[in-house]
Amino acid sequence: MLNIFKNACILSWLAALPLTAFPKDPQRQESDSVRFLAESRVTFSAGSHTPLWLVSNIQGLGSIKKNNGFVRAALFKDIDSEKRFSWGAGADIVAGWNLTAPFSIHQLYGEVKYRCLDAMLGSKEIWGEFNNPKLSSGNLFYSGNATPIPQLRVGIFDYADFWGTKGWFAVKGYISYGMFTDDAWQKSWVAKDEKRTEDVLFHSKGLWLRGGNTDVFPLQGEIGIEMATQFGGKSYMDGKMVSMPHGFKDWLKAFFPTYGKRDTFNGEQVTIEGNMLGAYNIALSWLPKKDWSVRAYYEHFFEDQSQMTFEYGWKDGLYGIEASFPKNPFVSSFVYEYLYTKDQTGAVNHDSTPSLPEQVSGRDNYYNHSVYTGWQHWGLGIGNPLVLSPIYNDHTLYFRTTRVEAHHFGFSGNPTPEIDYRFIMSYSRNWGTYANPLPEIEDNLNALIEVSWRPSRMKRWFLKAAVAFDSGDLIGKSFGGMITIGKTGGFHLKKK
Image 1 (cartoon, one colour):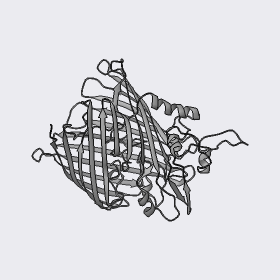
Image 2 (tube, rainbow, N blue to C red):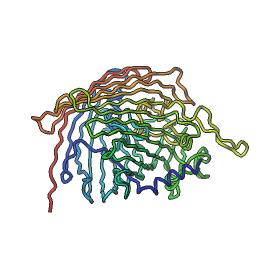
Image 3 (tube, rainbow, N blue to C red):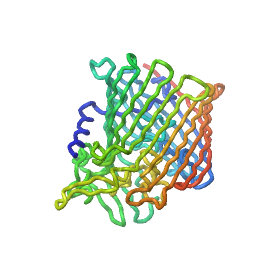
Image 4 (cartoon, one colour):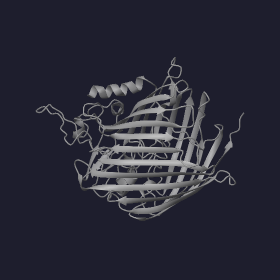
C-alpha cells in the first residue's frame, strides 16, 4: 500500500509542473491597475458564541467571541491571465477587537506568471477546489475557513490544455512548502500541559485532470488528488517536548510520504512521518451554451494510508450538487451538500508487529494527530467547518467531534442590479471520535442570510448586512448580526 502512496506522489510530479489555482475575484479590475479595498465590519451576538456562519469560511477573519469587529485596508495588483508574462502582489492589513489577534498582516504576497506557469510567495487567501465559496459548507481539504498559511507555491495556476488534444484534455497542479504562524497564540491560549506546537512546517501538492470540450459537447469531467503534510517543529505534551526531524531528507519525506525512523516519535515509526492527509476530487458538469448549468461533485478525504485505496470502501465524503439558473430576480445559484465522516475506516486499528504481522487500519480520527495539533491554524479548522474547530474547546487544540453526518444547502440571487443575497443552512449530528465518543449524539443547526447593496450613485461603495443563528446541543444557542461597509477602487499603473 505504501508503494501506491508513493506512486500517487510521483504521478503528481510527472504529469505536470504542479500549480496553484486561485478563484477569480469578482472585483478584479484591468490587469495594469492597482485596486484597493477598505472596509469596516461589526459583528454583534447574544447567546453562547458568535453564530457559526458569521465565523466560518471567511479566511480566519471571524471570531467566536461575541461582539467583535475589524477595520481592513488592502492593495492588490492582479495577474493578467491573457498575457504571456505578468506579475501580481498584495498587501492586506487587519486591526480589530475581540479577534484572535488584535492586529495581523492578513495577506502579503508576490506572484509571477509565464505562459501557463505560476509562482507565489507569501500569505494569500486560497479557496478549495470544486466548491462554491459563497454557498458551500466548505471543502474537506481547504475550505477558506482558517487564516492563510505563508508558503512558496509553484505550478500551473489554471487549467492548461494538453498539446494536440484540441481542448479535450487539460491539467493543473501545484507544489508548496510553508510554515504555520500560530506558535505564540497557541502558547498563550492552550491550558498548561495541553498539547501545543512550535515551528511546524507545511507541505501540500495537488493535481487535477479535466476532460471534455464544451464547445463541441456540453459534458465535462474532472478528477484530482490533493495531499498535505505537517512536519518538523516541536510538540509540547504533558510537560514534555518532542522534537521532530526537519532536515533535507524530511522535506523529501513530506513529498514522498514514508515511515518514520528512530529519530521520530515512536508512533510514526510504524506509520507515515508527520501528519499526512489528503482528498480525492471528482466532478461532472453539464455546461450547455445557455445561462444555466449543473454540476455534481464528490470529495473523498483520507488520513495516512487508509482510505487512499478502495481496500476499506469509500463511505466517507462530501457529496454535492450545484446548479446555476437563467437570469431571474429570485434565485441564480443553488447548492446542496451531504457530509458523512462517521466511518473513518472503522473502529478497529492495529499496526503490524514482528509477533503479529497482520495490519488492520481504522480509527483514522480525521484532522487530529498524536504529535501535531491537527489540521487547524489559529484554532480554526483548515477543512470543512462542520467538523467543529478546536477554537470552540476549553483551551485544548483537538477536534472534539470528527464523526459527523450533515446536510447543507444554500442559494443566492440578484433581485436588482444593486442588490444580491445569499442564504445558507446546515444541520449536523455529531458522535465525537472513536477514542472519545460524545455521551449523547449532539445536533447542530446553523443558518445565515446576507444581503449586499452596491448603490449606483455611490460608485464602488458597498454595504453588507447579515443575520445568523445557531441552535442545538453541540455549541449552544446563539443569535447575531453583522454589518460591513466598505469601498473598492483603483488606479492605473503608468506605462513606459
